[in-house]
Length: 330
Image (tube, rainbow, N blue to C red; front, top):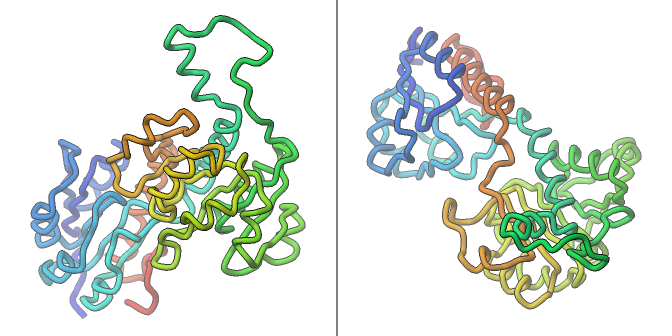
């Protein structure tokens, strides 16, 4: 096994919080992207060939070719973010590159944003804000900007991991009834604590709920899991919330469902081709659109950075990093 450098060369693809960059600069031979512009594929390739530790973000797509083309020097990819669907993990495994991520840090922040969308979409909060800013508000009226109450409604949670459970806790406090679909059923005591009903059949759950929130990780299995067929199973006055990954939902089918009234509305924090947003979504009044800001808190981003640092330090010391993504590597 090659000896690990005491002060490794670390290249970070985007600007991180100042406190995190300062600590990295103190501990490692760190280089930062001062312009904070996404790196091109050629720039990613050059960076991966010039460091011991590479720190990408969830917006950097690290293809198998980039990993295979990286020099022998690259030993650790310390991802700034919990998701790893932008990394070719199989290629990293074949090349013996350790991959880490930053799980757990963003659970509460992301759940807060999901809950905000669950409230904002049925209550038409974004529409009201736009009317006010445009100078079109003529004063209170009995039928002005009527939305739907969420109290007593059925919330369906697709993916009951850390974030899904945190959403359930918040939603229950707001008077929603909790339903969920997951690969594995939660223990009975957790279900009781959350007041959650398990649906082994996703299709059956979709037909029964009033709001669907997607909190599942993205994978080949979840790609377009919510498609045209499943959107048609939902009630016409139901809402869809997605703060997980854009490609879990078939965007073309979703736009059609929103345009035709198949469902009542949607709240989206993620998109399949970020930062591009389909112009048809921008023209819809029954959609709340956010620029992938589920994790955008000062505390969360610093916490992510600290996890990256902890993973690098553990690797330098010859230990298994605490957030290593793939098992069985030294």
